[in-house]
Length: 349
Image 1 (cartoon, rainbow, N blue to C red):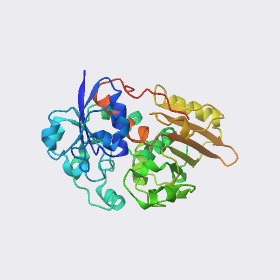
Image 2: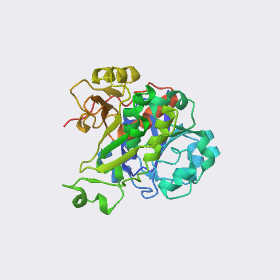
Image 3: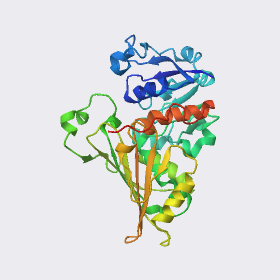
Image 4: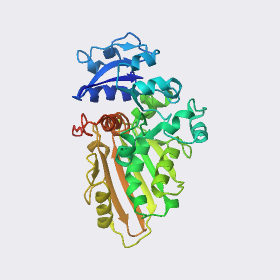
């Protein structure tokens, strides 16, 4: 069965990855690409890697209800609080929607307003949305009409910590997440802090105590733990194109659990999950070994000296942290093999 998809926000990095992945998906045809800034321009003017590969030009997608009558899935790779302004009941009746922005990730509109500095444009749709973290919410994703694709930092952080909470292994008030991301996480827009001379040969923490992904991580982990969680999350910018490494710390409740036992717990929790790789003893997660793939690598360890658990996890922020996971969600929603279009091995060097 072939399906047709449309992509909004086609000029951004996540859309570029969506196009690349979907061109290799045997069950999908890209019907149209919408971009307000590139209307009527060939897509290869934005991304020359698609020259003579994708003969599509960007269109004006303002008549969205009409356009959605001819597609099965709509991907919204748009700025925050834009998708919420354009989704209507007719759009959701016509097509399934996967939103890669933060519009439908947070259930509390006051929390959204506090972290995204704007009033939510369509809170009535929040009750219909499903948080699209595939490995944890597969059953809810399958029948959904509207899926909120998780953020990149939350994907890496939540998946690396979920087994600890599900097995009641840590003190819930002790979680610290120290995460690093490549510069593509800031998007393709021109910004002073993203210029080459500003990021090259430098390494910095940013949004200290106030990063917008913090409540998203807390929300998901609280659901797993079945009680509210407050944690410390500090992101850092690394002068590389792509990749996230999250190192998480927490106090161990049972001192009898060692690294070997912890690794067995992780492997059991993620048994059968194609995209989750629990690494062997002696290995640590590294961004270079997941680059260009939809995999997450997780390395769990127990520090017996301090009675802390230390977890390293890595993803490609543009794929498992965005477009790859969006395609994984599409596969679940449309009844395809979950790994369809996503089975490429990581790239190296």
